[in-house]
Image (cartoon, rainbow, N blue to C red; front, top):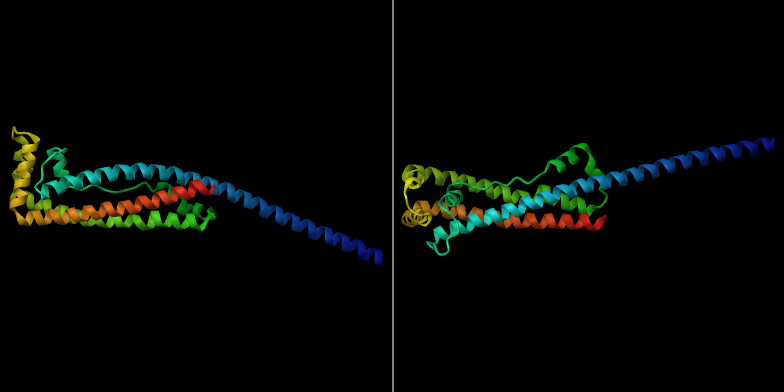
Length: 226
């Protein structure tokens, strides 16, 4: 009887150990699979971050160019003019958009890929970039668009020649810009509208720098954590 008991105990022990080892191996395999998936997710994100960086550099250059051009007009300071009349119209009656790439992030978010990232610092940095600093740029861009529409409408009704006739004049780009500048200096309403637009352009640039800092922080974490 004792021998039978011992035999069953050994068999029971072997079964328990076998099941435990099997569970442990399954968990270990899942852990390895998760790590592999995490590497894939981070690699995909890194690709998108490179694209975002190129976009940010392009936008920063364009935003700065427009801001400096409009500043010269408002300050009536046309020394060293490095823009033409169409570029002046972009700065004054148009706007530059901001739409960084988010296709990969959106895909990873909805298919559950982001859950494989283990490091909280990276998760926080992702949230900051995609759902934080970006909206400072967008909010000021939207405010700029509102003023831009008012500027365009005001010029269309009061100075249509700035949008139509001036392009037909056989004068230099600088002379065209000077005509536009003289009108701005004499018309306080137009100048106030453009001053408001300049303020939103300045804020847009400032928040773009915050977005850029978030981008570099995330890139650094991705680069140094794996």
